Image (cartoon, rainbow, N blue to C red; front, side):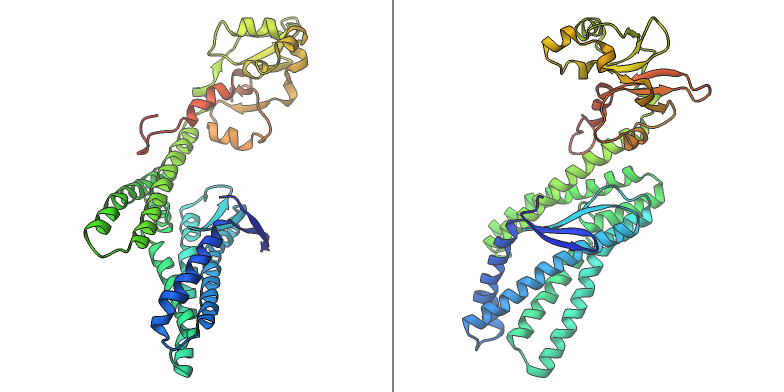
Length: 382
């Protein structure tokens, strides 16, 4: 969710709002001032109700920000970088750069958001009680009571044990601690979210159609929320499956063993004719006079050159020199290698045998890309 307006930073965390927040604010100001507050405070002017509704809406947005700040600040204390927080019409998003490293970190990062709302509900409830005790049922009392109730709802509803809700991540932490399998735990809790999302998407229209339990607006909001949970659960399942593949696949399983060498004086055009004979290989050692590799070349990267450039460019001009190529041990997982690979670097990874350090294979994006194939919504077939 992209920011439309940057508001600044809190504890070094960029804070922004999406344009859809203005729709959310307009709706709550209108509904509170015209429908809710007139029932609570009978003798009040529209102007006063609008001011109270604007205050309640501001408290709502600050509560959403507080929820996401709870996640973000605990994540920072656990060593996870936070790219920023964005508030939008369906709530807020704290963008973390990596997954928690331990079940404890997963638990407390997830729990921090709902706990923040529960604390805010208690504080606002106490303020509302004091106002009511001093002045009776005023618009200030109504506005703060509403904000307290919304915080309680945000805190409790987010504890439901289904990803992508915070309760689902708490469930992930519990399953992870018991099984030791982080991604397996994430898949399980996301599957719970998938089931809850599908059931809600099917049930809400039926409840709205056959009963008076939901107004048209509440049915629409509930359905949108259910679809959001369903979409988030599917995305969580896919991400966890892909991370598990990367973590459980070793470079030895992925690499092309002992790829043939190519001469440094070859033009890219001649090299590609040779490379096309075996499409399974994309990372080639480059040698001069049959000696040790002086560099490595990626056939897929070479294909991005224009036909004219291919005809006169030689491999020693486009190869990655051997001292600068990314290297890995055959016992390492693919995820470990990718984590230390610079984000702006593409090309050949050279695999070495741990005992004597000799190079025994290569892999490139061509070998890695199948691991990123999206699974089905339940996390099985590709």
